[in-house]
Image (cartoon, rainbow, N blue to C red; front, side, top):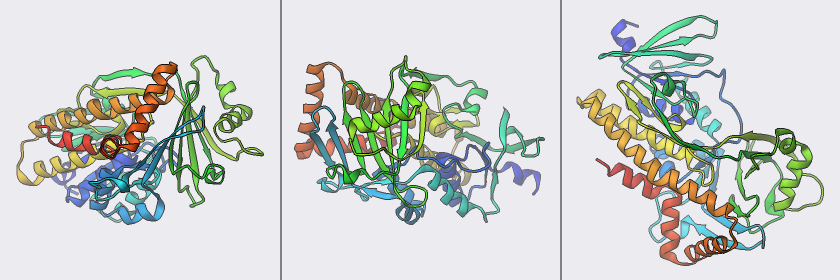
Length: 410
């Protein structure tokens, strides 16, 4: 491969779902890529797993929907429940919308399956250079290119050059830090506890759907179902903890069991697959572009998981950026104005929609003041029952409005 050819490509740091989707979207547009990932293989766990209707449309456009339907779960309904009274507060059905999206459902497709599907398709593509066990340690850019210094699997180092670099390397992004972009926002004082179990909650609570939000003034809960690694079904329960609680208190088998029994009492113990305790942030990068370096996904923005918006916003970043790189690559468009527009569009989607909505979701589920809690739950009841409010709620919750308004930003 000659020098000019080696530089004429996009370097992507991070082979999570956003980096993988971006790499695949660029290859569909005939743009060469180098995909760099610090891990030896995609991490298999039940993290992000929700693809909202606009995201499903993008997945279809990429030719990945057949894989998603085969590996995931179609979930047109999501529920809000009051843990205290046991009442089903609100039921939101995407299929019942008067103006239904092309794909009237959320596709529960785990992020590691998305990555696996993309990597399998890129494996035989000579213009997709995939580097696992490779870590970025330095970035330099000039008027013509960006140089990325990486450590290689054998312990050595190498400089990889390209026309542009996109950081898709997560909330702790090395790329964002190396180019000194501020990550604005805050960290919630409480940590979140994620519990994965294979127990089928439908047997206990037939009113549940694949996506459920339990309101509780002391300990709310998200309860989602995904297909699982071998198709056996995996439920993910996410709930808050108290800042003063220790790891030992929270992760003990007794504490984990009590947490699930509180929401869905049953005879005998739950079978726990995995548990994780983690900090939760609401942050957005000050800019998503810095010269020839760009950010997408968690590198550019992070939010709490109530609503399943994080991966969706990142995929929307990736498709937006792929379109702009295509215009630069093949249509002679000037890069800087398009990259500035990319920041304006995708920051708007984050600040005005994902950040605002995810914060509101969390505050609604965990509201402690009895009067305010009653008001918020009554609001969900009214929105669920009124067709116009029902549809407006879904459009915001499923990022339909977010994508429309972001793409309309000049």
